[in-house]
Length: 293
Ligand code: NDP
Image (cartoon, rainbow, N blue to C red):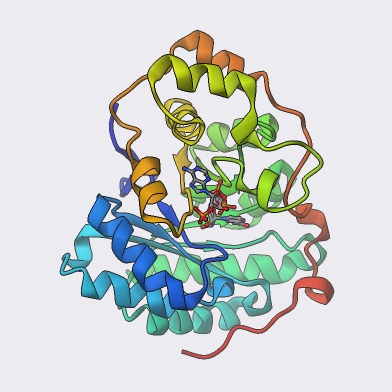
């Protein structure tokens, strides 16, 4: 199995990315440095995470050529709108210290102000046409948001980053992504949201079905969940600030789950979302400002 996915515009994206949501800025340089040492070549950050500057610093310090690391970041909702999003690119690129971003995505659908979302997406299309970004996409878009976007814009998103782990799989959104040639990228791929927040169900790390596969392959539950995501064709972006887990989460290319195991994990879906409902992400409740570079 390959370690990268080909996006719908031909760009290659390493399938496993390194997430930095909730990684404090003062821990981000060390975490990203450790990830790059381990072999990760894809980092997933966001303007709203407040650590783009540290992500950029770690990449520069690594000694790797810029072209060897795939940088993904996200535009926050307070920067939606055409001109605002063009400027938000400058903020993110400035903090990251790069001229070009590999994948730039809209963090939320913002259904209450979809006019702003459309303006933001048209700015992404412009940045793509100008070569400032190599690919564009979205996050937390449900089928109806994709339909609205596709009806009004011309570039099909390369990626839709959504909550996907064994307890919340969103089959309808995965199907919508597949129908349009959009790569589904799983956030909380080891179910982080099921244990760092009260999500209404127990931790995926304690699940007996996952534990059975882990035991059968001599792996950990986290590795089994990541492998399940990869074998189902998704990109996965696990987060950790601990060196041993950063290593563990990348050691997923040398074993294979059986079809029966994949089907058993598919069957664990509870339909209960851990993160915020995309319909409820509004400017009133989530309208924090993103600082200038
Ligand atoms: P993950 O599924 O990656 O889980 C992260 C949690 O699991 C942390 O508490 C981490 O703690 C712990 N952990 C990491 N590795 C292991 C392991 N091997 N065994 C046991 N525990 C482990 O959840 P996230 O929600 O962080 O999602 C990953 C990434 O997805 C984010 O960092 C971000 O980039 C993205 N994301 C995007 C969202 C969006 O709206 N687009 C929303 C949420 C996330 P520790 O650090 O102490 O190891």
